[in-house]
Image (tube, one colour):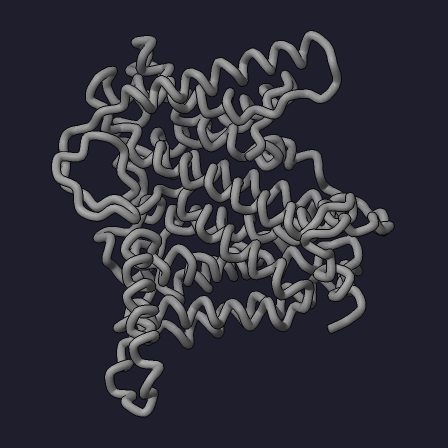
Length: 450
């Protein structure tokens, strides 16, 4: 390990924090916010599309098909950009004197928040009392207020945001307390089967929940492995192998053939049972396997954007990223023989090729924004990139508010049009409006931080 690696990891967990060290100043890499904002714009666009839009803009049909469409790259790009942010966030935190123990606590708390938000989002349309759409509208507004960032400076603005935050927390607790769905037989984590369950259930954790599991996996691995890129790159392969192992018999599929393990067999059988039980609720092969590999790929790219990176010059970053993209494409081609390309199954090829596309798009944005200096146009998407959770929940809030006001037919009628051009233009306009509203709310002080 290098001296920097030791400095990065040697913070005593029970001791004082690392002494803040000087971090070389450099221009912020605006293309990261632009990629995040572009992903938000694309998410709103594809989620808003009506059935008449071209099929390549919708999720692939049937869902089990071998292939991917425009809509199928949105979720993995979210995972990728989460990974890009991890080393940059650690750099800022440790430079400010953070401890390893404090960062682990922060990772766990953020993961728990993402899991909760994912479960709420996944169940929101199932409420039977107020109606799914009204409950969702109120819950998403409460979420934005509950997790809003309160200004540190004393004054009226701080008092207002503290009050709004309190309203959001209380409102969300009330909405969770009254939530009721149709009775369903399910299985609760660490409890077991339950009949006639009428409250929320985890099922597949929702989009934000899956992001939470991937974030937890990659953030902890990054803390453990440090900044050695070859170790981070190797972990991508390990995560892909975890997916393949869990989907093709499990980690301990051939345990009983190994009688030579002798006295270790009882311990390994217990471990196998524990892994299988956890896999029922988490999805180790997907959430912490192939999906986490996408996030780790983003983390690897983020490592060259650190201010102390040895890949700092534009031509070095172009060469590094181009090589990385080619490597991911080749790896995806090599794994295609196992499961093909499919988003629902989180197949290795879909994951690796989605990461390659995300890295390629970032490279193009980097050349245009950070190297050539053409930034003005990106103002359309960068506000959403700087405040992504607001934009994520704002789209269903806008749809819900418009529908509740009785203006759904005139304002959202484009979704039901039989003309593909009308559908695409209307959904593109909606995506731009959501990004613009996100920027406006940020100017008013509404920022969401987990």
